[in-house]
Length: 284
Length: 154
Image (cartoon, rainbow over all chains, first blue to last red; front, top):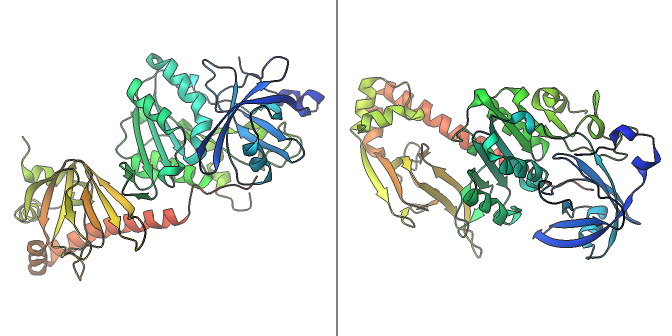
C-alpha cells in the first residue's frame, strides 16, 4: 500500500530526511544515472506509481525525483537522475555505499487501476520514461486486466533513450505495441526519426475506451495531448505528470504553485483538462 | 485485391479528388518495391518522382562533411515521400534509403506536372495537398528546434 507524507504536512516526519544507502548504480546515458537505494535502518518507504521523493545530497541540497522502481516485485527505491545542476550532479556522483537523505513519498498516484478494462496508451519523452515505469510494470503484471497496451517513446537522440533494453524486452515478452522515435539519428540508428507526436496517428487504440499517461517536458506533453485529442481521446482521459520546483513536498512553501494548485500536494499527476488552461498561462 | 486507384483514393493526400482527377493520377502511377538498404534517391538527383509508401520505412539522411550522416527523418507506411517533383529545381534534398523492404506507389512527377499545366484545377488540387505535406514538415522542424526534451537545472 502506497504511503504519502503529504497528509502529515507541518510535522517533523514530513521534513526529516531518512538516511538511505546507495546500493546499486548504473549509467543510463552520458548524463543520466539510475540509483537504487535501501534504508540504513528501519522500514522502507513504499511509494506508489507516480509519486516522488525528495532526495538530499548532504551539504549540497535537495531535489524532487520521481520514483522509477518496479513496486510489483521490489521494495528498493529506484531513481533515475539527469545530472544538470549542483544537486543532481552530486547525486549522480554518489558511489555505492554513499548515504543520501530521502523524504517521501509525496504527491498522488497515477490512476492506473481506474484504467482497468481499457486500452492504455503511455507516451514518454526522454527521461520521462522512468516515472512511468512503475505504472508500466503494474499493467504488465496485470496484463489480462487491460486492453491494448501502447507504449510510445521519443527522445532527442538514440543515446538519450533510457532503459532501452528493458523497453525492448517488454515488447518481446509481453503483448505491448511499442514504437520509438528520436528527433535526430545517425545511419547506425535503425528506428524511426521524427517527433514523438508522429507515433500517435498510427497507434492502435480505442479512443472511446482508453486512458493515456504522458510524462515529459510540458511543451512535449502539450503537443502529445493535442495529438491524442485529435484521435478523439477526451482531455479527462489523458493523464500527465507536472514538473515544477517542489521544495517542501507538503504544500507549505508554495514553490510549486500553478494557479490554484500546488503540484507537490495536489499532483504531480493531473488529467489534461485540469492543467491545460494553467499551462497556457505564460506567467504561471 | 484492391486496384491501384482504390489504394490511391484512400490516401489522405489524395482524399477529395474527383474520379476523373484520380484517373489522371493513376495514369502516372506504378507499383514499386525496394529491398532493405537499397538507395531510392541521392541528394541532388533529379526529383521526377514521388512515392506513397504502402509498407516499410525509408530514411532521409543528410551528409555532414567530416561527420557521420545525420538521419533527418523517416517516412512510414501511409505517408508521402517527396515533394521536390512539384517545386523547381526538382532535385532531391536528402539521400533516401529503404531501411527495410518497402512497397510503394511511384508517381511520375514529370507526367503529373504536364497534367497540372494543362489542367489548372488538378494543379491547384495537388498544390493544395502537397502544401499540407510541406506545412507538416515545416511544423515538425520548428517543433524540433524547441528541443522539447531539454533539461531542467536542479
